[in-house]
Length: 272
Image (cartoon, rainbow, N blue to C red; front, top):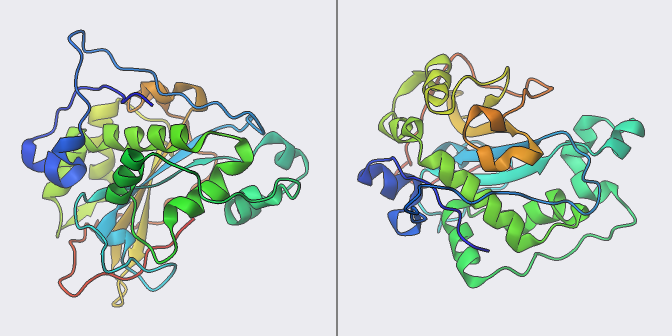
């Protein structure tokens, strides 16, 4: 799949830590961007995507879920968890609870046997190894089996789009500023305002935050969840790409720690 082109606005230091300068797509002379789009041949009538981005030191903190492996890269700090479709309409009509969809995903479609991990190009496999947390069981395989395969999407296209969405967010000034906050406690309202300074005004719950807790009970930033229109991914990260999430899923307190990597390694990091 051709690389999505966008204008990179971050500083060089932030580029290295947040996204990796060697992987920034080049800018055309016209400054245009290629469209990002995903077609779902099956069950494609869902209402929104959740783009789940990780703050890697926080994602790998906490007692729950799969633990990050010893080879977990410590850069970039902003990673990719997944791109999750909401409940298709047939499950809504069947009154399948949204929490069941979150828990079981594509396995709810019994007639569609779970598939193996997708065959991805070497370049995309390498890129995913840089931005997806290295959990004990493959997070990429988990995301494909649970959130992609029942929609009939091509794995190469899906993960290429997901990584480019992550890269677009990581190139924002708000993301570069978040890097400078590592090791400090910040206000959730301030982080939201910084993101909106780049995206434009967001709908209610258009961006939500997830926090893990340290063994001492301190809340630490682990994920940033963005609710997106399926037909407007190419407009991300601008306002027109966003929807209001139908549910409140933000579990972070008003203030929380933006963690750094601990010197003794990291554990935790739940997969959804």
